[in-house]
Image 1 (tube, rainbow, N blue to C red):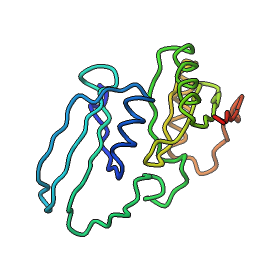
Image 2: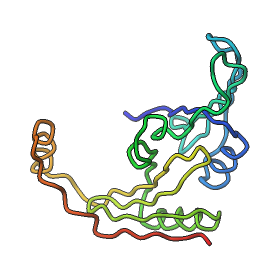
Image 3: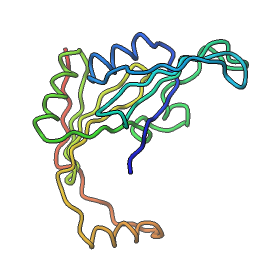
Length: 174
């Protein structure tokens, strides 16, 4: 089982559309428009990621009572947390796709951070909502010892730190 869609508010749907359709390669396939139970109305845009069961969606809100036009769209900042805590991670099939995604971001003028986490390999950039987005490739496997360690971390108050990333590299688009 996976998730069907992740939905977030947006201030600038033109920028969101350009990023998620033209840069990320997702396709806008459905929009729902209607009144909000609290008042006002909204457009709800659905971008297909792989197939008709996986979407990322955005709300364009109009005339919502009590909603300031300067609301925060960065989910970490809204929670008072560093950017890397709340982020959106998408999977890739293989290293070639990860490299192609990195090049696509660079070609679009976006800076990219690349990290080898020792069990997965990731690239990161920011979307127009200022959220950290990631493409991630699982490169390792999980053993029973990994599971036992993960379960132990639920209750330990003095954890042993994981090894640092094998590689961290930043690529500037400019």
